[in-house]
Length: 289
Length: 245
Image (cartoon, rainbow over all chains, first blue to last red; front, side):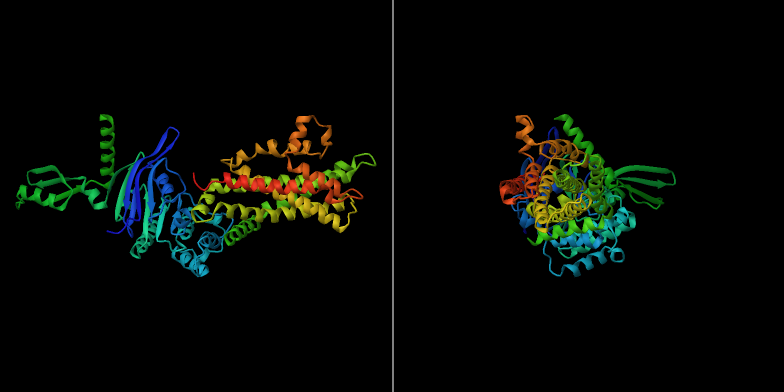
């Protein structure tokens, strides 16, 4: 089995009375599109900052690409791309100048050509010479993404890259992420949008500084239930079954599937519902402690 | 070194693109020197204008270089670009070096503008070597001011927190550095404070240069202290500008 791209053990981070991270254990396989899902304030940004070496955890160990983000930060920072939650761009400079400046830190070969490539990829070529302050929020996110990937890093960490981005641009971003993952790049993406989590290979769910689940999105969905309504000539029967396909087959077999069945309506829990239930279980467990 | 120059290039491009800031930075000393001219014109004949003109120039450069550098670095922190620079692989010595070179360029232009204006407005007849010596002193003071700005910026979470440092660090220079009154007429404790201010050493050097038989070498100690001031501030700034939260 190959070494995980990210491995954390028991990371905690305290800010005075606030516990931003509470013992996070995480393993991210290399070459995957990994989602970090959680509500605002869950600790996602804090975790990402610990992974890129911008924050010193109170306790615990972190390895990214086999390196310690604090001790080996010079070596690690040459191998990662980072897109922060805020645009973090020089507003008076053009899109091209911003991307070139962040790319130049890596001594990337053929930087000028590579800057053109990423500006084209993020559909900014036509306005590359304009100051960033004239751009909309979505365009600034594109400049920020281009700055994160310009040096072709093997790992990219993106902190809510699609926040305040319109649906069409969001779809294009996710297509870019998928393309990068296909090429072997590891992507670690935080989001609070449930539908985005479904686009990942694997999702870790975070709340109140803790990881409460980590699985492929289909497995997370399978943790929910499906409301089954069987409508007959005599009325309708409702039941709740598991969300796996075999659960439905079992339920229908038990029912008999006679000719009187006119239609079957299936309303599975959304990922959001599943997670809200998980949050509730976490609260119950905490109350019992 | 290459990455230091990338930072310098970026800082300089930013300054050149922000025409309003650039114009105000150069216009401000220009206007203030003119106001001093109006003030000095009200003085009785025989008033030693030369004793005040150049030190005031030096103070303006000191004040503006400190304030601009501190504010822009704090903006970098609040805007997230400072953190992004570090995560991209820029190191703090490269960031500090890039800022020093970039803002020293601006401070040099400010010093030149103020110097030329003062010479013309106050009708000061200095030879070229004297002017070059004055420029050297103001330039060394600007270097210390930029580094002071970088150092102070590490204690400010937002732009507003920079301003309390102005009355704390910069304004006392007006009264304690020998600009307005001779330092040895101040109380003992104030004289101790004077020796902590870079403008005190710059003023000593300037007063020596403008003497009819002045020799800058007589103030070599002041120049050395100005240089040492920059070295110490460079060291302190490199300790306090943190790459890790």
